[in-house]
Image 1: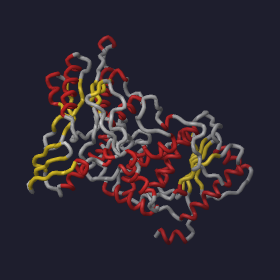
Image 2 (image 1 turned 90 degrees about the vertical axis):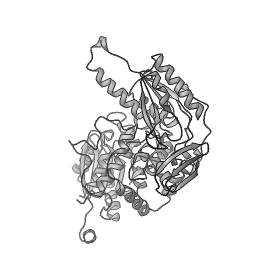
Image 3 (image 1 turned 135 degrees about the vertical axis):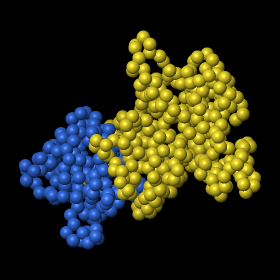
Image 4 (image 1 turned 60 degrees about the horizontal axis):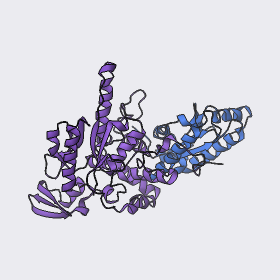
Length: 335
Length: 145
């Protein structure tokens, strides 16, 4: 990973110095130990702030969309002769690149607005798993050591195996190498256990209706509707989200549990053929709602019914924007 | 309370979201042909099944419908050529998803019914009403506040 980091800095510096990009979106060291935070580099000299390791969690495609759509909006007020192009460089691992593909498929910006700095990925550390491994002790200092994490807490020092704290979606990731890239930093990462991708969904499907409903209501009961999941999701970019729509109002804002359940059902359903399982929504959730169980089901169904894997290929068409005459019809009621 | 209602003359409330060109006309035909079918259905007419947002189905369930029926033109017969093909994809996902989270699969129903199928429309309504009646009043995802 050291080399990858070095390569990212070099390439970012070069891109900025050659004025090939206006900004590079990447990760820098966070203020707390064992964290990284998104950073926007605009000066070649700042490129050394970029880092890349297992502490980099967020999907950066979200920021790419934010920057480019804000730019597009600002350009509307500019005289035609003064219009400027903005090119964004982005450090993209597998899931980030898939999100970029989805945004490109949905015509949010052009491929020439983007320089993709591909990076191999071995997974990132799930903060909640870390919290459990340390029994809630605050991390005072920490460092990554190849196959493990060395953490210092007030209770003493502890070494944790990386595989024990990697996020669930990383452990069974199918696309841990970028699907599109202009430059690649480092060699491709080894494959993960992607054959176990739908293990949890398959197990959940075997439960009875009542057990499933009980789990769903239990999980959604935790949700405080802070909308952090929506704000972190690279596929949630609507200017006006349905939760804020008031004329007509789709989802109520009362304390009734069904309002929260409906919100989650609707938001997750928006992810049909658009969720890349990057885990951003789960990592930002302050209540630890198990969203992945439900998002992964949509992913599984889209694959089963429409042979679609979200953002896997540039040529793909979003599954709900197209159809086949012989699509499965077994759910149609025929008296 | 709901238990009392269930046995005490409860009648299922079904929202049928139908397309203007086929199923609505089919319902009309059932009417003018004086074909009897259960009066438990409330019809909402939309231009096309492709126009039906899957949210409408969930929202109807939240607002107290015991069952929802979505019906449009048969595949290949859409007034807008491909609307129902797109709808079919959406609702295939929706039906599976709602059963996955633990809703009763029989509460959400999808079918095709053309303008000349008044008989079929009556049969569909009868069938859906019976399926929903067997399930009893909706309790999941129903807003009570």
